[in-house]
Image 1: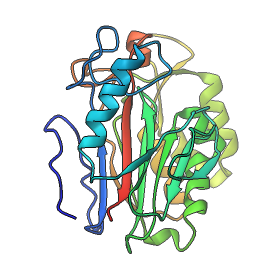
Image 2: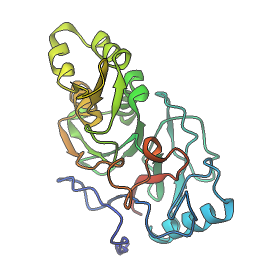
Image 3: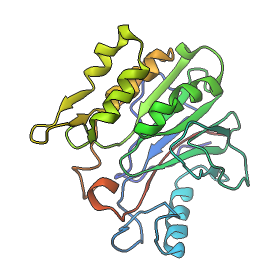
Length: 258
């Protein structure tokens, strides 16, 4: 099927080696009809926005995908459950979704949490995961890799827009949880993902991209791309829950084209 253009303010993964039949993108906050504080391309139907505006925005997204594509949305709960995408399936409570069905898109919604997209080098399976720090601790990325089956070394992963390390402030208890779950030999590497806050004692600046890369490598995934944005510090381009509180959600999705 001919490739359809993506809006210039949307982001396409720069992962190398992805098969031509794999289509993926991550939206920004630009180009929709929602009014403040959800302005303008809000795709979340659970954040208080006008349902008609959300529906209109989702229709714009659907129109940018190959004709007939079904989008599998999730009811995200910051856990590690992974489900298989299906057409006409209500949003299940899960934080990751995979499919081997061409024409069904796997989607996650974020506004600071990390979206991670996956594909196989053969181009026969794809997945999307919502990985906030709680999801990372719960093992959502490892669970997604397991759900895709096969050799993890044959997977490609792309880290979409998330809060950057200069803005992601956490307490010592978050750092301690990551440290305690890591084997002793890996704890020095985990420690590099946390930097003491420059002005607030007992607080840390966490690098969610660094944590995700370590988790993915530990699961056997070596081809990891992306991880260069900061949703918090780019208010004109991205929604950020930590920055704004009530705000919209962006979508990151991946599919096998028919």
